[in-house]
Image 1 (cartoon, rainbow, N blue to C red):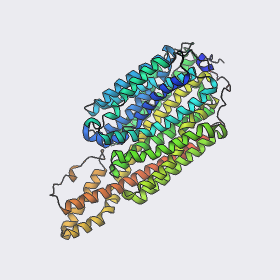
Image 2 (cartoon, rainbow, N blue to C red):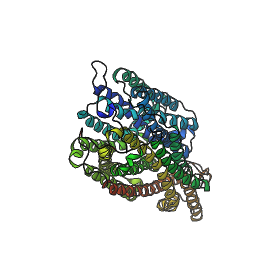
Image 3 (cartoon, one colour):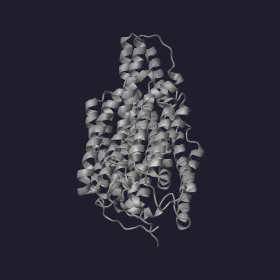
Length: 566
């Protein structure tokens, strides 16, 4: 039985910083870069209708624009951390920032959906080089007594950034800077990235691992293939009506994951330097914590993307309106994150996560009831109150999980464990987007008759007022039902099916049909959104149960942990 040698960065030794510069100056730089990355995970969500209209994109292409970033990020996270250990964390951070900035420019200059998807994959991959260095730089630059506070701030800011993207995205689209429509949501990264690069060169000290670990290219390829085999059919399956190959691909992903584990185990016993330290999974707290983090992000990833569809397409709100409502969630997240790390986790440990998961689940249920009961007439103030409440739970979970999950993790494996947690986060969000899309659009299709029925009474009344004969009314109402069903069953929630392309002159009948369509759509989207929320709440209840497997208290600052046999 052998243990790994403690590395300088993992023992808390601090490399020499530039003269007159303390660790907090370097921390601000890496925090800005991490915020920029997390902002870009959700900033696209609130601009979906604008992107579709401007680029002529299908909804599946928009899904890939969102999940492509997450997949690129997840694919590079662990490898990016290993590259930093070998070639220098500051060097890899600066390469990541520069490349992320270039990729952001390509996103903003995209002229086709395909170009945007490829640019987003590149942007995510470059974030995967940049972000793993953040916690490594924190470990290398902060003394043990200050390290926990820095990690707590990082967790809180990360939680806020995850929802701030919707606020910033809505504001930028509404402002329509220079007539560039959605493009500033990406182009804004250029000045921020340049500033972070210059400041990083000046303020961040270089650090690397003395043990010189080696890359695991075979493991990296196997991990990327396994994730792609799983997520691709989930994203494309609904559009293609679930052909046989989608199920074969999902089954193949399980096989590749199993082979990956076997390969990593053999590499650990022979060559060493595996991509994933499998010994971490012998820690009950870590393996359970990884499941908690994966499922939590699965629930939240699906929620964020469906939430924006509900507000903008279902309720017909503008990007700015949706962004301002999202700001109330961010307020709650700030309150939850701000109180949990400094005040609650040191006293209550995993109890903070238990309460946070229950608050988030309860918020989902309350929101679902509001949406189902009020439909298109839902009140912004009532929704905002529920969002503040839900955001508090989200902030408590997001800011505190890493400290609690890593409570029993040896210092020697802290970097690998953090990389796995980040990968689980990105994979969970990608799966959440795919699975929520499947559920949401299935319910939208199957509930179209009920949605149309909510509008028929008023439609018939309007047709009577317009003097339309009864036989003609029945024909109009029947055509309306077919149109609404076809639109609800469409792969693109904003597309106009052929059955809806009936040319009629402006007048009371057209106005009545437009109003009926808006009423039916709001009711149908509200029901589909509510069902998706209930599914998310069920996942959060499962998260609540898994949290009991975590250690009761967070690790005390500077407390040693036993080495894990490798």
